[in-house]
Image (cartoon, rainbow, N blue to C red; front, side, top):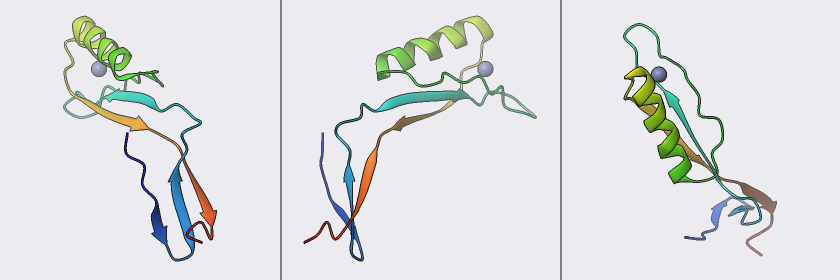
Length: 80
Ligand SMILES: [Zn+2]
């Protein structure tokens, strides 16, 4: 796990290690409109993979947009 501080003027953006990340996928299979099935927040990548595999198994859909959501805090003057 990398921990970096990015600076934008006098603000510091820091990863918030106190909150667990979440994993989410949305099915984007479809010609004219995406399927839109949403995994909602999953606690880890394994759970997300299981949700995707189950969706593919039951629908034949096989293309997803997925993301890892994590938390950050912004603190004025964090560079000091
Ligand atoms: Zn789908």
